[in-house]
Amino acid sequence: MTPRRNSRMGDTLAYWMPKLVLSPTLIIVLVFFYGFILWTGYLSFTNSRMLPSYDFVGWANYVRLFNNERWFVSLRNLAVYSVLFIAICLAIGLSLAILLDQKIRAEGALRTIYLYPMALSFIVTGTVWKWMLNPQVGIEQFVRSLGWETFRFDWLVDPNFSIYTIVVAAVWQSSGFVMALFLAGLRGVDDSIIKAAQIDGASRFMIYTRIIIPSLRPVFFSAFVMLAHIAIKSFDLALALTGGGPGVSSDLPAIFMYQMSFTRNQMGLGAASAMIMLLTVVAILVPYLYSELRTKKHEH
Image (cartoon, rainbow, N blue to C red; front, side, top):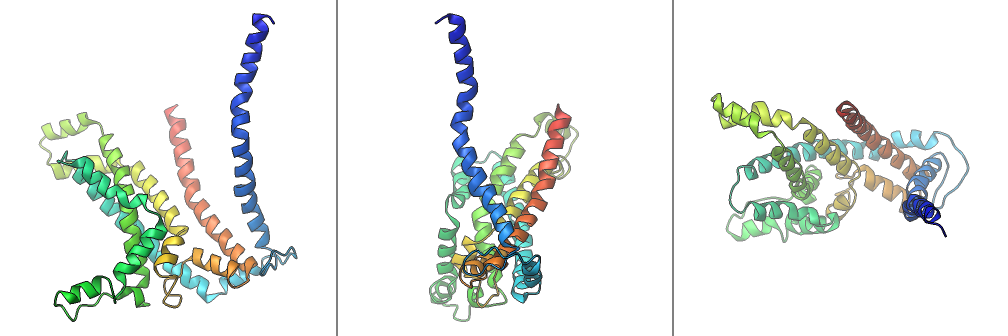
C-alpha cells in the first residue's frame, strides 16, 4: 500500500470518525427530544385521555385549556413566582458578586458556600424547605421554643402565601449561580477604565453604578433568560415543597400539565398546556439567540 493511499485513507477516517462517534447522540436527541416534542404537539390536537388517541379534534383542547379556571390560577402563580424569583435572584446575585469582587479574605470558601445549593437537586431543596417551613417542626416552632409564643410563620399552609414559599426556596438555590455569572462579568471589566475613573476622582459607588454595572448588560440578559427558563419549567421544587397546595393556591403550569396528563386522564389537555409552556420558553430564547448571533456577526 503506497504512502499516498495511506494518507488518503487517514484523511477519510479523520473526516468520518467524529461523525460516526456523534451520530448515536444525534439520533437519540432527534428521536427522544425533538421527536417527542412533535408527538406531544400532535397529541394536543387529539382527544387523548388515559392513553394516546389519534382522533383529531383541532383546537378543542386549547379552547378547554383557556376556559379552565385552574389553568389561569397556575398562570397567575407563575407570574408572581417568576417576577419575584428573577428580581430577587438578580439583586442578591449582583450584591454577592460585588462583595466578592472586593478581594476579601476567604473568597474561595465563600464562593463555594454560595454555590453549594446549586449542587442539590430541586427535590432535595423542596423537601428540606418543607421541613423548615412546617409550622409544627420548623422555623415557627423553633422561634416559639425560644419564648416568642405569638410568632407565626405558617406560609406553607396558608393559601395566600404558599406561592411565596416556592420563591424563598428557589432563590436560596439559584442566587449563587447568578452570583457566579456576575462575578465572571465583573472580573472581565477593563481595569484601565476603572483606574481612569479613580484618577478623575470618581467614588467607588459611582464607578459601580456609572461604569461597571452598565457594562454588565449582557450578563443581566443571560441571567434573566436562564432564570426565566428555570421559572417556567419549575416542577420538582414546587411538587416537593407544596404539591401545588393548599388546594391549588401554589399550582404552576408544570404541575397542571403533569396532573392532567398522568393523574386525571386528560392527556390531550395536558399536551396542550405543555405546548403553551414550550412556546413561552421559545419566546424567551429566540430573542436571546438572535442577540448572541447578532453580536458574534458584528465581532466578525
